[in-house]
Length: 442
Image (cartoon, rainbow, N blue to C red):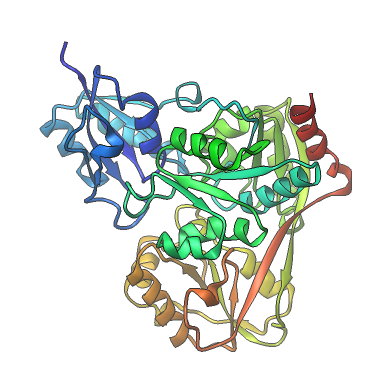
């Protein structure tokens, strides 16, 4: 029989993982293309033959998703596999309808087929949306495990936006490692906070190979899988921690695959409670009760601290880019800090936005007024970010990104950094330690 012809819809992450797990060496299938979206400028590449395997001596083309319908017809595609995250259920089914109308089947692979087994215990930290607070939760869990005397290594959800061969397996332990690997701002936002805490973090393209390298080089007692967007864990986790956001109450039932994460959760962390209304918290509590009735629930605040003074100052608020774009948040940690710590006013960067930053505002018009997204997928975006910062009038920059922004851009005004940490309520303080001990010491 002729192989079943497949297109994998993705965004440079879950798509490659699904290929590696389910299609790479199986002659019953022929993956004829990946499509790309969400992330700027990742189409036009090829998944290289060194990663694609012996069935693909020329590699596999990566094309923009806008070409999907024509590709299905031109390449006589039998099936399209949807493989990216943090999109609404309606969005997913719209794509399903398009694919079906073009004559192909539509499939979403589940965790049974795509979760790699590990001999080392795995704790995963995932979420129901981008921007719920995974990074601060991951740092908190990492510290708990270290206090238990465990050697921990973090493995981060993929962000392979450059040379895919070079990014097959990446290990980050120093800031120099970030420079040597030509990391984008978006990558640094996910790796730098681990390095700052003295932790080791891996990422890349081939997560079976990453697991092998972690075992060989670091030999940890436990792996902490640090999820991306609201995607599912890449490893079969012994403890699944899922972060939810009351500021977007209701989204936990409306976004893919965040709802799946919530339904699978062993522990649900309700973050940012200090910024939420009682109505938002009530909606969220009911949805948790309906979708994850057996899960333990940790109630927590997101504690903000500043490394400088902003009271009475005009500030330019800079926030994590993906949280504002496909995460659809209209505020972030710096926005909250500007109000909480008495900034005089928040400057509007939109009139000064140039190039790729201006394009970002046009693509995502719902980005909150007075917020500059720290976009830096390319060198041009980084330059445009720097120009926008330097031409916006303000006393200082208030940075809510997880990185040291001053290390990345040459700002003509002081940068005050907002730091945010998970702060479980006293009534919930022992839930995570007990859950971790159950899997590690049983």
